[in-house]
Amino acid sequence: MKTIDFDSNTFIAGIMIDHKICDDLIERHKEDDNKECGTVYDEKSGKNVDKNFKASTDLTINPYDDDSRVQNYLKTLNDLIYFYEQKYRYANDLVAYNIIENFNVQHYKKGEGFKQWHFESNGVFPSSRRLFAFMTYLNDVPDGGTKFYHQNITTPAIKGLTIMWPAQWTHVHKGQISYTSEKYIATGWFSYTNLEKFIGKF
Image (cartoon, rainbow, N blue to C red; front, top):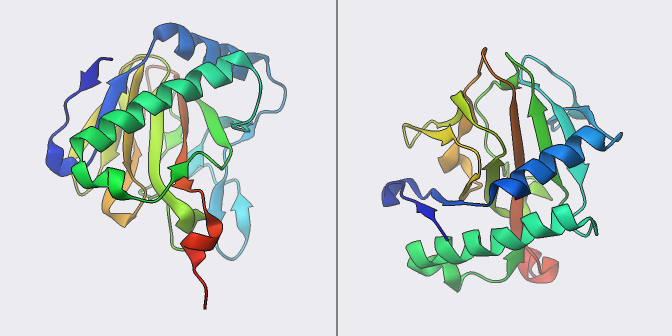
């Protein structure tokens, strides 16, 4: 397993995955007819399309999808978790977490992207269950990485680079918009799996 060394103080960790897995996910995105315009969540109106905020074409995939291309990708994320928990000692003291929400394979045309600062868990259930986010760059985009506000870094869009970071407000981020290349990513969340333990008893 090849790992990518980000400063430990960023709480961002990365590994490289096989390029074939990336190609397979792009293939799945291209051939699947269930793609939709990317949406953003508003507490009042729910999900809506706002291309000033996010412009993309998204394929939502259930983690129990039996397509071998999907399952091969999800298996590689176990390596990512292992590396993260080795790098950050107390991360492995957390109660069980896994992928329980659908994840997305997203396509950005030139000039598209997630344009506004945001984070992945806003405190409203069910997003409040999200512990970590993950993302894989499925193709090389020299000017299409991800900017992290408080960490003051831009993770590079290198094909196969798969990163993991806390889902909370500490990791506000947005896409680096490329006007020269299209971009594909896979992205989703690791969430607490035991709902009763997460919510508690009152």
